[in-house]
Amino acid sequence: MGRESSTQSGDVSIVLCGPAGMGIQTVESLLTRILKQAGYNVFATREYMSRIRGGSNSTEIRVSSNRVCAFVNRIDILVGLDKNAIRHLEKRISSDTVILADISSFGAGFDQSRWTFVNAEFTQIASDIGNKLYSNIVSVGTITGIFGIEEDVVTSCVSQRFGSKSEKIVRENVEAAEGGYQIGCKLVDSGKISIDIQPDSSVEEQMLLSGTEAVGLGAMAGGCNFIASYPMSPSTGVLAFMAKHSADFGLVVEQAEDEIAAINMSIGAWYAGARGMVTTSGGGFALMTEGISLSGMLETPVVVHLAQRPGPATGLPTRTEQGDLELALYAGHGEFVRIILAPGRVEEAFYLTQSAFDLADKYQVPVIILTDHYLVDCYYNISCPDLTDVKIENHIHQTQADYRRYELTANGISPRGIPGYGSGLVCVDSDEHDQSGHITEDLDLRVNMVDKRLRKLDALKNEILQPQLWPYENYKNLVICWGSTYHIVKEALAQLGCDDTSMLHYSQVYPLHPDTAGYLNKAAKTVIVEGNATGQFCKLIKLHTGLEVDGKILKYSGLSFTVEEVAESLDKMLD
Image 1 (cartoon, one colour):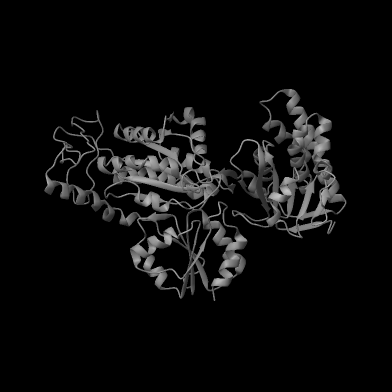
Image 2 (spheres, one colour):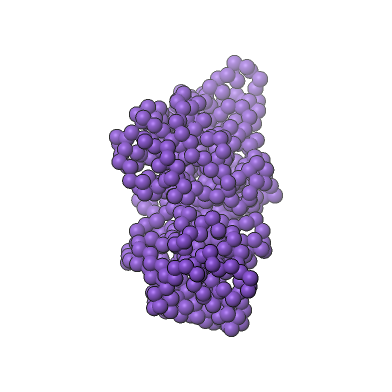
């Protein structure tokens, strides 16, 4: 059966896998919170199939003595809740992986010889309690027992998690966790598994925050008081999160009949003086493109959260990709300015979403926040966001009787009034219009209005986010990335230990920072890491700088990059 013990030091990757409907997400949520409460740094991300029942879903939980924020291919401990888990994750299982599973539930014909199994009677304990579905909670107890977390902490968290259920269900879940806890303790006592990870008491005071929650909280911190959306994975979590907290923040939440209605409602909210938002994915955003153009012509702001998933069409609804950059960049007809932000970290998703509302308000343009399935679904422990400098910038003007909504200005930004705030008439129109907002076919005025709107691009250049260069100012090789690949590329470079290579990460992908050419020209070799098939950001760089990137690391299978594959690819490509 191979090696029967596992000793992990500093960082352990635990993967739980079972069929849809088995409660893997519940296990992930419960286990990460118990581990964080016990002082362990945690990172979690999941992959799941687009189905209600069957198939195989898995979640990776990294537990570490130090902060961890990236997905790894390595599996140190695999909790297999059925035999299909082994087949599903076969490519990631190595000779160092210890598989905790109830072998009796796999059937007599299952071949155990290829892997290292440690028998754990998840199903038997669950069945004895009253329902084999409790095997997932037994697995939670087992992991906590392996880590030596105080049993009272475990049972308290389980009781709290299921507190809304009946007393019987709470009791049985606690019994399941206790049964699993004893399994974990016995595995440690027998020497079959040993883990050397030191807890840090400061972690207990930190918060576990997902990308979904960060976007939602950032929107509310940015003064968002209206959201209209039509559900579409992986963006729906933001809508649900904001709906859950709507009463606390005076937020109007509307599940629209479709995406066209949603963006028009949000534009209307801005026109009336509110701060509106939509959250969607690629297919929904495609329906919103006329609304994006409407925002451009009306010069009425709107904020769009676009959580990317693989396309075209329905694609892989529950997988990840960075394939919608060009969609966001060129969405809409005609020419007008937009801003595209692409947070690389959960905490950055909070700050950039907050700032998106001020940028939209100040420049009267659509602002698109590009995330992806990987970023919105992953979470890890962070310190509470610093709200000291988080302030809402209000750019609404009180109108006078002679107010002209589209007054021609040097910087292209006309004073934005709203109906009822002042004595002026706020007239807007989706046709080309004069300075007062009335329809015009004066062709010279048309040119003046287009030029006015485009002058905003020059006006906002001083606010373009500087890309983050890490760790060296002086470098031979430069690895370029954007959005959710931040932590993955950073850990891959740290793993390689190159003293001549730096990462250049973009959290604002449009307008492109004017120093981009300088960064690239300074490097002897450049490599870009993107989660798409055609190198969309690479093409954008060439368009604006005329420079070719030397090498590309692209992935579009529907799964996120892993630290190991990026490190391996860079090792081959860099001198």
